[in-house]
Image 1 (tube, helix red, strand yellow):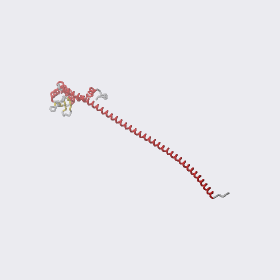
Image 2 (tube, one colour):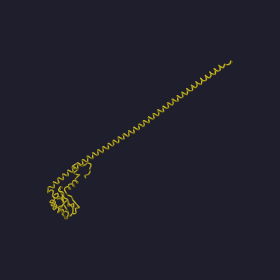
Image 3 (cartoon, helix red, strand yellow):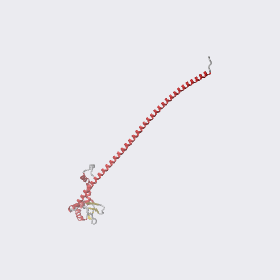
Image 4 (cartoon, helix red, strand yellow):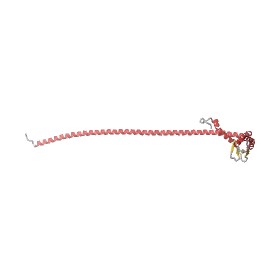
Length: 253
């Protein structure tokens, strides 16, 4: 076996080192490539997971947004409906009030027109009564009835009569004629005088007033008072005669 030269040994060592380094580098490169691949896979997984998470978050956010939007829309829709319902009720109430007001005004106008008609009727009756008093014969008979009726109402032993100044004579004649009739009816005497200090107003239609001795009990039998009493008693019949029966009234006043 031949001896190796120092150069040969050195070259061999160098070659071995180069080979070792080459193998080491190849392995390192292979190992680095594997790690890079793993890293890429991990990054891709992380990115995909993040993307899915973002999509999930966006989807959930959009769903919540739509729910909230729907809730707000429904809330405002309800509020709008309530607002218009309230307005509609206010308008209806206003219409009812206005209608009631107009109907009341109409009823008041009708009532006033009716009252005016009745007043005109009573005024016409007063005019006719004043004409009646101008007929001595008719007026005398009327006074007979008024005086005798007043005496029966008072039933007092002493009576004072007031009349118009222009009626003193005709009243005196009626008193003289009716005292016997009264005394015969009640079986009692009576004293009747005419008040010559205080007469009834000359512009009334006629008739008399009478009172007892102390003036505490009075009877008014003027033509106006008799007309008012008669009108009050006959007012239901007068209204029916003028305006017809009231369908809402079962009984006459």
